[in-house]
Length: 504
Image (cartoon, rainbow, N blue to C red; front, side):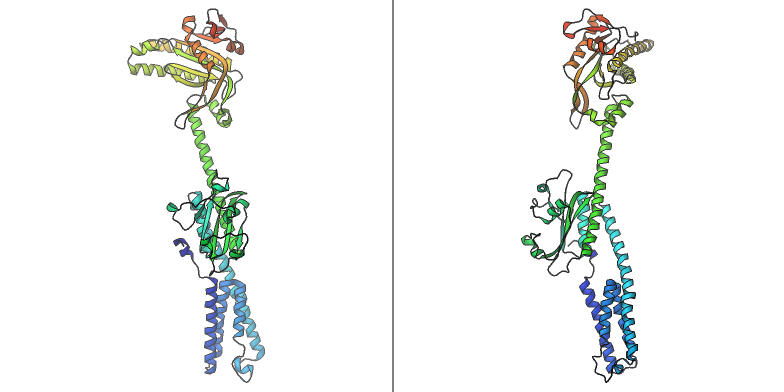
């Protein structure tokens, strides 16, 4: 028995009745003695019987007051031998009957009313404390364990156990019974549940169970350690037909039986625990969704325009792995290796970052997505994950704007005495494989495939072909722009087209 249960332990009803009956007979003995001694105040002592009658009503309600009233009336039965009944009471018979009636009404109405009000107040206070304790628990296991402990305390049970069904534990063979009296840190699960286990049956059927003859109940299978168990209450912990677990409390052979009232109390506790677990899991899901959204926003905000990020967050299914037609743009700085080898590293990094900032701004302004940076190379694409019916057009416009932006940068750099950059850009519309690649430590949504490699080879050919921007035949045809064909293009790259950066 845990310390918490001991603190909540109350005097059993049987003991309360013993005290009340003891009070009645003590008063009866006092009245009897004073009557034989013919004490002048013995009639007044009979009014002391009002105290145990009130005590019974205040403790057990109207039923207790009624039973105590009957016992009090029997105290006035003339078991003392007097010549007449009037000699026993020193009251006329009608007055004596009226006195009996008033006694009975006092116990039933006054004591009972006080008792019912007290019980209602105590019930509300107790349940408020219990439910508050349940909602204070930090996790699901603690919630059900606390529910079991409080249920045992309220019902005066000898002990109890509980089970918790995890999010992924839909198979009953995975469920485990946990003893409520064990310390949280040492509460190891027992082996898997038997099919006829009362907790498993209670959880699977989402039904409560009560018996006061466990040894003779066909629904109950008791092990050797539970042979002395007589009374059992088991209730499921659920919310809106979703079962999160169950708990059971038991009494031994020498304990009072469980009553239906106690079953109702335990149902209330279980419903509260179910609501608390439901809220806990819903909050955990919300936090997980917020975390996923933050991770996705952090991931895409660095490589996508804000409007695309918002659209993808509203449609997370777009991040599923698939093949899709996109337009790929590959941009590379010509002669960057020689530049980096003859320039101070901090100057290389500063100028390269300035270049990337300008190029990325242009790509975002044209609804593109940065796939990756490889050294001085930029790979971007249009048409995914957010849909873009004009992805070829937007990519070609972005390439033209990138060429103009680089021209402007070179003017600014020349004034600062920095070396100019020259770039090549290739654009190719094709089917690619896209999806989240990596592990939990580093995950990226990227494009891949032979056609992406083709776009990279196309960019490598820009210098040999004498063109700043080259466009594959598929991209040119999809865009609808009037572009100039390149006659000397390598055969493996297919038909290629070009235009000056300021033509669009």
